[in-house]
Length: 178
Image (cartoon, rainbow, N blue to C red; front, side):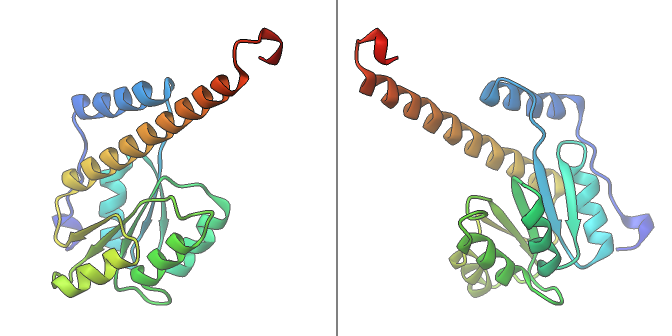
């Protein structure tokens, strides 16, 4: 892909408004979601950044080792990673993320030119939440990211609500205990 062939996906007003409505509905406030894009190819990394940036705060890394360094200091909501990269590949990165108690909750989407079922299974067995074959449609990737953060946020809200309900049930009817 050369510069003249690169496609920048800019969501329509309705898509952006829909994302903002989901965030407001789930959290009751505007929250900025952070995505870490891990890709060694600069043009593809820029393509991903351009497609995701209108809806998310996007951090970038050129390999898995850089990504782990970023994850030490920065909270992200989703990691999107290529498979084949120098220093640390996407499969090893996914495994490290999913085996660390601090980062294991972060959804990981793996992008790869490898379309063989065995490659996909290997990625999914390391804990990847999705596997997308290249070439891919950036609008589909954005929608998958929105769906991931939406479902995770709804789970968080449900657990917060149920935890609050359980603590109220433990207190009983005595106003002094509240």
